[in-house]
Image (cartoon, rainbow, N blue to C red; front, side):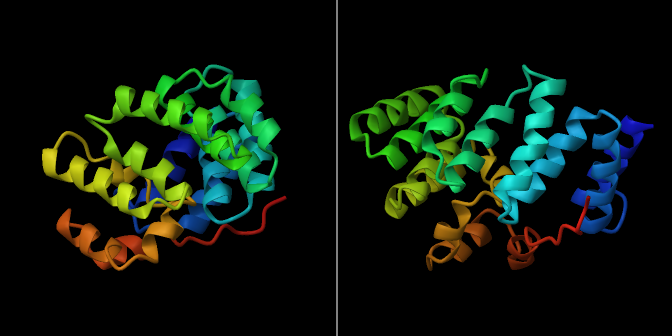
Length: 212
């Protein structure tokens, strides 16, 4: 059944109880998505997004939006896909429909940055800090990383680590912004400081098989 395939796909994707196999996970997600599993369409959309294929990611995330309109995160990642396709106006339309407040603030900050609207960017960044900064500094760090403010990005990552309030950094390893951080000499020491082995960074590199 669709949800069984979705659960098995998640196990292969994370290596939970089985040998990690991203290609097998993608195949399972694809089959479950075709049978109406919003969770599998969402996961497959993220796999495409994180491997640099925003068009195919958007197609899967659009399906999620039809199947589960109020799912948190869908419109945030639709927004990100549009931004990677240089379609800021469509990204803004997508993020305005995101039900999660912190996701919306984060996405709107990214959009305003791409539009060159500094006041809007700073306003949404301030809202994000108010909503999430105390617990999930990694969310703030991602916005700064997108904007190329790497000193600020590392400040927020280190704040989350030092306060022990959250572990959001474990959720962001595949995000496009990580490419900016990963090129910085502070990135590997940061990973090591939170107990991440170097191979965890390599683990975000997965190959999505060609799917119809």
